[in-house]
Image (cartoon, rainbow, N blue to C red; front, side):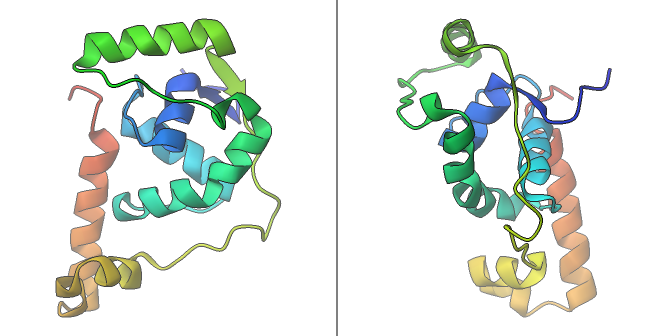
Length: 146
């Protein structure tokens, strides 16, 4: 089932905004939200920086996010109970508008990975890009249960 463009589950939004994984759709939902807002594709190692870059925009569109604090929890059941409560308070789905064209400038994933881990700078670019692509596929599948 395809969702309407710009429609995101509260768990995808909270995971992106807070870094606390509460995303019933898995990491793909986080990728989808970040890529929708920025208009750029990202790889796994870029998600944290991209989330930070779009946080102000998310809070502008959903002001309740600015004051949101997720209490500590252990386990999926406890996390989903908190998420259900937040969905009851704020709504389960939200429409998110993308940033205006040119407001977000993407970054080449290879130099960004090399800045995070100098070993990437020592590897041939084609090999490094292949390794990043394999890592990215694994991150996108996280949380889906497959």
